[in-house]
Length: 255
Image (cartoon, rainbow, N blue to C red; front, side, top):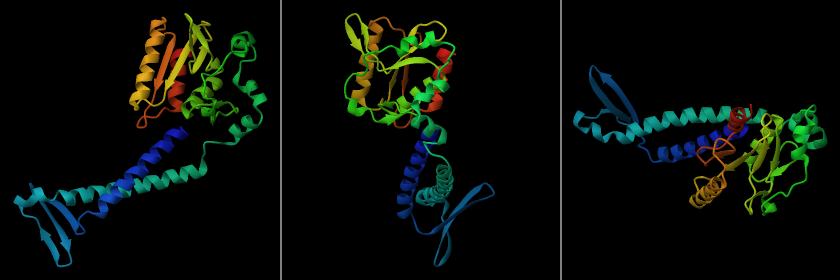
């Protein structure tokens, strides 16, 4: 949720900056508009007084209309940005609970594992070949100290932990002589079936999107069925992934 709010704040700041630039070049005169019966009346104030636009000239008032709209929108967004900044002062990506687990990762299993179902976790506990290269990209920490490749993967990882699911991160998957390294392999708690979860985080990048489609095609050719034993989540800059998205997927597939 914090990341989603932060993204929203960034969008507001960007729009405020656009509006500020437009207002800097907008007409300086004060605009007014009202309805006189069924007729729209508009005009402006300057140093010499009040002036009305003629009816045949109303098509020329767009800069004034734009200024009024931008000014009202600017004030609203500034107020909202101030409220969000106040929120950020009280909240952060880290909190005491997160710090506690990060400092004591050996205790995390007490919270994020069903201690009465050790057999369910045996598969996840087995040593496995992990990672498909580029370890330098592992730079985002989860609440238990685990390092992953993206903030979205951290959200998925933390929700898998919170929901006490047995899983592997970037585990080598051998299919018909081909090696795959899915983001997550998850053991279904009821069926025991292994489910692939791939998250594609840059779908507004054409080359990345082509890579994602090729990967999906390979999974399909190997018999994996989307929505059955293959989960796909995506995001773009305009539509970021959130913890609530991860919660929804887990609820739909594993509860």
